[in-house]
Length: 297
Image (cartoon, rainbow, N blue to C red; front, top):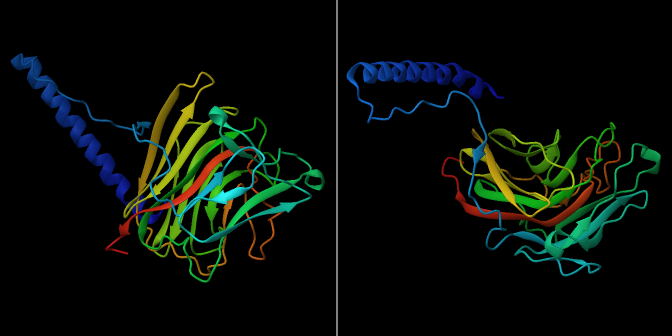
């Protein structure tokens, strides 16, 4: 939490106390005056899960949408950007196309291993095909995410203690956007020239259940939207949000790739010491610009 957020906390709590006192006063007044037909609404005094009816379909006209025609077929770009798609691997790791939710095609990433000497890993790299950086959101509103089914075992060693889904940029760089499974919860991170925001879903994921995650950055908010499908196909959706400035999210070099399933270093190779390899199946990873530039930058 940044200083701006900390400085606002006492005021928010004071506001809740004031409203609570006012509400209790109203209830007492109603009790004395017998105004039973006038409902009094108690305020929410703590954080809670925020249900959302939001559709998690891929937005219209995505910049990047990793297409999978069918099981066994190569990956293709269905978005508007001119990009190249490659698989970067370590120890003969591979990404294969298999059957996913409702029979659709999905990417199968390597299974977890606690032994780095015997752990095939693989990450999909999506790179600008030319000098024009089409993967930079700048100060515009944008969204990114994927549908996934994580394996029962997916983390626990120093070199692989996370599961990254879709990201561009690294923690050592000034600009970053990332969708991941962090501490068994879907999470989003975005960093620009005015600050960094991180938001985590309130619910822990269930291994073996299909889950959709969308991260959405607007002028003053970062939100994570999640839909979970149980084995019977029923679904539950919820969201979490944080507020704060981010500024322009602009990568220093157009050659920095967007990755699916893990992290790639500045030299273009897979980061073996901290892969954050996703272990499981992924469908329809995407990135889309959804709004005009923020007037405030």
